[in-house]
Amino acid sequence: MNDHDQTLLQIVNHIVNQHPLLAADVEKIAAYAQGKGYGTATIEQEAGLLQQLLQDQPTLAIDVGGNIGNYTAELRKRNPALEIHIFEPSTINLAQLSARFESDSLVKIVPYALSEQAGSATLFSDKPGSGMGSLTQRRLDHFNIEFDTTETISTMRFEDYWQTQLQSRQLDMVKIDVEGHELAALKGFGAALDVTRVLQFEFGGTHIDTRTYFQDFWYFFIEQGFDLYRITPFGAKKISRYSESDEFFAITNYIAVNQRR
Image (cartoon, rainbow, N blue to C red):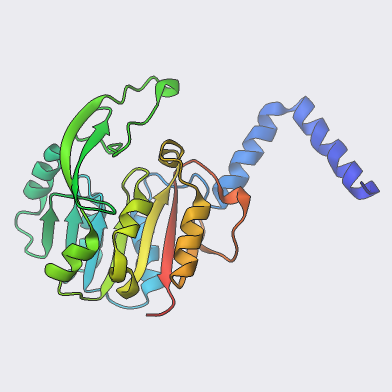
């Protein structure tokens, strides 16, 4: 260790020993500035950055894990002529989506969860209609949350829907927020990923429960010809290479941009 590193270490040790709370705050602020953990209540910015990276007016969007439709509503507000297909399996949420968009002919509600294969599955949550609903029964005892509400739902591969219902059209914008099963949904896209221009996905604590790492997403998208960006308070930051520091399990949003489209 050289003199500079030794001095720096002494300074860090002093801060940690004398001001432990300050040190923790600095760590949180540094992560937040990089977009790590900056992933709640940011729908307006997320949609804006997605459209900014698209660089033109979208005509077709896919909202995977639509919940009660807030993301779709933001996209429709920005694009009055945008056709959106929402995938949502929760019975309670489907009723709310139907009521919310019943007069909007450009919004199509699809009562399925997306996965690698078609079939049936159990949707677990802390309460009916929860935005935390996942195909994995999460362990959240440390937050005093019981994850024991269940519902049997249907799953499908998006590639099948894309071929039969969308006639293999180009997908301008895709958002995937399915509480830890984003990678499984992506694997079900098949050839539809080739015509996907920009895609947003969430990464966070749910991926602890599904044992999925950011590295899995990194290689998946890089091998498919996409560039990856992290959404930060200051805009979209391009991730030029993978680092173990990217394994940050607080809600973080990413955008993948297809370089072949």
